[in-house]
Structures are given as structure tokens and as C-alpha cells.
Amino acid sequence: MPNITVNLPQNDYAIAIATDSLKQLGSQMKQLKLGNKVLVISNPEIFAYYGETCLQSLQKAGFETYTHLIPAGESHKQLQSIQGVYDVAQANHLERSSTFVALGGGVIGDMTGFAAATWLRGVNFVQVPTSLLAIVDASVGGKTGVNHPQGKNLIGAFYQPKLVAIDPNLLQTLPLKEFRAGMAEVIKYGVIWDRDLFTKLEHHDRLDSIDNVGDSLLETIITRSCQAKAEVVSQDEKEAGLRAILNYGHTIGHAVESLTHYQQFVHGEAVAIGMVAAGKIAVAMNLWTQAEADRQNALITKAGLPTDIPHQLEIANILETIKSDKKVTAGKVRFILPTAIGKVMITDQVTPEIITQALSSKL
Image 1 (cartoon, rainbow, N blue to C red):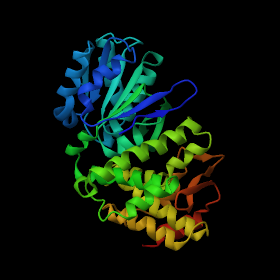
Image 2 (cartoon, rainbow, N blue to C red):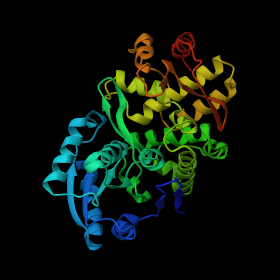
Image 3 (spheres, helix red, strand yellow):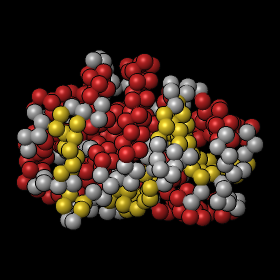
Image 4 (cartoon, one colour):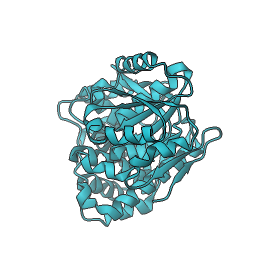
């Protein structure tokens, strides 16, 4: 699989994709001329599978390694967890030339990046994503952060990694629920950017497990999703305009996550629900056709993902929650809405009445 470059004015970096490449992480990092000390941040489950291989690779390349484990789950994506990272960095005298390595999924990547951005006002940062969602989305682009009790990722920074090292072999231990969650982001890229990817997904019989996807389509999914993310981020690093399209499905998805206290859905599942809702809104506003919405929803269903707002959630509470979304500008919520397969628009003209109508209807 080819390497992909994220071209930025000051922070170009590679997305290095290669099977069984975790064993070469140390040599990859050595080529970047990073400092000697490396803090590997992971969660206990991931570290049990891959921690030893990661540390051995780093040590073989001459790095002095330290580790810090954070319990798995969105509920631990908070400032208190970041304090734990700072404590380990301080105790082991990590310097500005040192590197934080995120070995894990999107939660670990976001927290590690935020800790790296803020420790000593910025240390080196390397992403080693272990979930499909992290591989195709969260590890690329430099968005880092933690949650606030009133909303997801409200505390954070743009901070680019020095390297994103992707080893598809790490997906073999990924739970089924998490694989499906990653497929939500893949479908997102098809809707917002890559019509050909969307069509390839349509032509595949099943998308609900790594075995059913198969090696060939998995390679396509990883490379095309990373390429799409790199192209968007290269044009708009800090979400001044175009990059906002990457939030397709996230406005209502984040509200669903927050209102269910991050207990009922993993992130990709909530995004799937949000994409279905956004598609309904787009149909209601005559931006795209019901037939196109049906094609999107068929892919989401084929990937084994949820499509409906939980019945216990009040629409009034969803409307209130999205007012706290990061995409609110001058008091208006910006929605990303599809106008065709492979194309979306950004608008702040979605009224509460349209949202209510969309959220009230079933597929």
C-alpha cells in the first residue's frame, strides 16, 4: 500500500501504510530524527496485544521508552486523564524533543495528541492507530482533544503528528462493534468526497465484518479514506472552510453520544445515526433526492450500523445540545448536507422545524 503525504505549510507528514509494520515503528521514527525519550500511551486491552511489539521496536532503534495506560472508553476522555499523562511525563523528565506515541483507537489518539500539544507547549507526537475508525479518520489531520460534560471534544487543539504509522494487521483483534463503527466514517467519505469509493462499497455484498469485507476492499478503504482526509486537510488545516465537511453526520451524532452519556453508542454508530438524519434534512430541503438518501442508508444498514434516534431521547433536548456544538457560528448551527453522492454543502439555514421533522420520521 502506498504512503500518503499530508501537505501542510509547516507540518508535512507521512501516512505510512504497510502490513506488519508495527515491528518497524522504531526505525520509521529514527528517520525523523526525534528525541531519545518516548512515552507510549495506550489502553490496557490494546497494550496487552501490541505493547510488547511496539516497545521492542522502539528500544531496538535506541529509544528510551516509558508507558502510560488509560482505561478504555469515551468516559475516560477527560482532562483528569490528561493530568495522568502529565504526571508520567514530569516524573520521567520528558523534554521538548521527546515524543508521545498514541497506540490505540480514536480516544487514545485524541488524548495523546492533546497531551503532546500542551506538555511543554508542544512535544513530538506519533499516531499508531489500532481501530478502523482511527486509521481512516481520527489519526489523520491533527484534531486533538477531550470531552466536556456538556459536549464532545469542546476542549482541544489542532496539533499535527510527525507520522501516522498504519499497520492493517492490528485490525485483526478489533471487536466487531468497533469495525462497524469505522465503516461509518468510510461511508462518510463516499458521501462527501469520493463517489467511486461509495460505488465500490455498494457493489460489495457485505460490509459488516473484516472477514466479509476482505483484504482487497480493506486496502481500498484504507488508502482512499486516508487520501480523502489528507486532501481535505491539506486544503484547510484548521477548519476555516472546506474541512468542516468532514463533520458530516457529526452534529446530531455528537448530540446523541452526549445525551446517552457515551454509554449506548460508540462514536461511529452515532455518526451513522447522524448521517441518516442529515440525509433526511437534505431531502426535506430539496438538496438531494430520496433515492440518493436510500442508497446511503442501504450502505449504513449493510455495515450493521444503527439508523434511528433512540426512542428515549427528546427532540427538544437534541436541539438544545446541538447549540453547544463546535460548529455553531454567530448562534447558528452549521450543518453539512449532501447534494449528490460525493458532494456536500455547508449551511446554517436548517431550521429547528426541519430538524424536528427529520428526527421524527423513521426510515
